[in-house]
Length: 115
Length: 117
Image 1: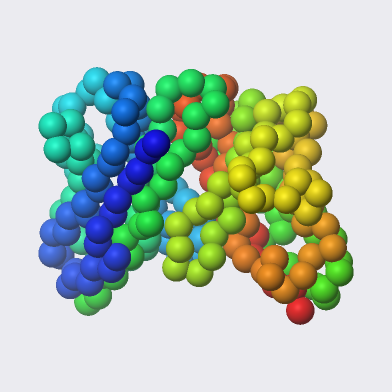
Image 2: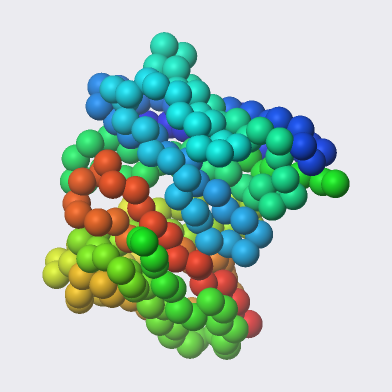
């Protein structure tokens, strides 16, 4: 069975602060994929990143960076110099390989960035 | 790229009405589409997976006769909530994936907020 845990239910920061969203996962599969999605107040989910289990390189995209640590089964997401537009619910998700696999979502972390 | 359009965005209707929600992949062929339901401040709950040209696979506890899914083409899937009741009120989101391999990300529609009076 797969499980994704996002222990932080809500985080509130002031603009320009850095913030890290935690994601811990459980799976018995050796090959799997991890994703982060953003859900702004308007409702649509926006794909942010995909990482496969064999690639532990950290990734940076603008103000966003991801830290994948297979040893601790974590895939954390950091926003540097947060902005009000970053306010959203962020979901971490996991899937294994195979045509029948489905995304297992975490419960989400609501990020509120204020001025 | 990878745009998914979902329509309508909001529906308000009387109890007993059937409601059809469309999900279209606009710039790619979606072999697999997914339908989710999301309650306020909750995560997404997968309802069913549909592959083009075949019957949908429903998750445990989801009524097939209540939530009819059709995936007739590589760019269109529909979810029909039959004889909707107030407890069916929710936010329904579809997603589409290129190919059948799970390593491809799912791209989501904007969601449909369904309110049954």
